[in-house]
Length: 410
Image 1 (cartoon, rainbow, N blue to C red):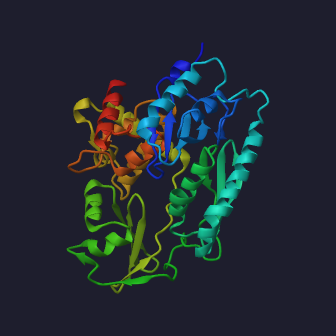
Image 2 (image 1 turned 60 degrees about the vertical axis):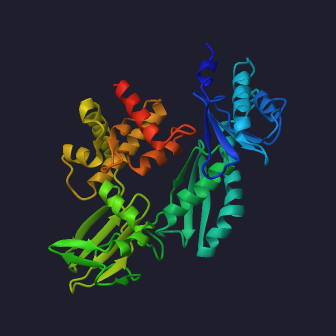
């Protein structure tokens, strides 16, 4: 039996970073085992031939169930979307392989070699010239089944901004230029090297410490107070965003004491950035590099995700949606950072649900606040999994749709 019925539902998703591109997402791979890019019509590939017959189509990339179309300048998506969707359906309903005969196609090993070569070119020509200005370098170590393993060196090794550089810069660049990339993994040991930014050993933080004005970080009635006007820009936020993040539980504060020297470490974590300070025995404080998060084992992350999933499935509809903080309390999690662990576990469930085509059970959980919505990370991850809001659908409507579908699925 043909699986073309699975292809009939086509979802168009605009690119927030590049208005000239749009994803057309199907319910099944266009052609199993085939990843390809076209800059023009190809008589051997019916899909490419049909799409380039549409005036305004400039480039086509196909990866799995996603067809990425780039339009020519001067053309409008409102006029192109329906034509492109109709052409895709017409080709997929035919008997011909949409991307051409693959009987002579190169094995996966050759595909990986081609991806590695393409990634290396992008890094050398686009990414590394900019990264070199900060004394860093990124190289592609290997590719296995479409997974690209990158290694950062020089000023990037151990740099506090390395994760942002990788995710917001290099990864976006590679995914746009090399359609065969399935996943990007950073294999750098950020804790080693001659001047690693992070540290694991106890004792004083490395030099880099900056004094903090006494009025900006102080004890009041046994509680630590941090001036929002001082902290917000260090987390890349406006003052109102910082206060809202604390209110919603998206930003958390952790305290720990180093008994060897009597310092108190204060760490503030937002979804995008971490800031840290040390309060010295004399009461003065200094800004220091944030500690490297010790990643939980894969088994531990999976176990907590399973626990959170079972808890959400067991809750009666009248208690849903439930806040992240309430989930942590229900599961007996009271240590600092518990809400962050819960949100990480919810992200694991989202990836699992995306792989199996289930509604996001994470939609049953929300941040604390008047909006009664999940945190921003829920929507960002949904979009990265190509399961985000439909065109013209608001975040609120998307959340309500996912929540209702989750409840109907049991």
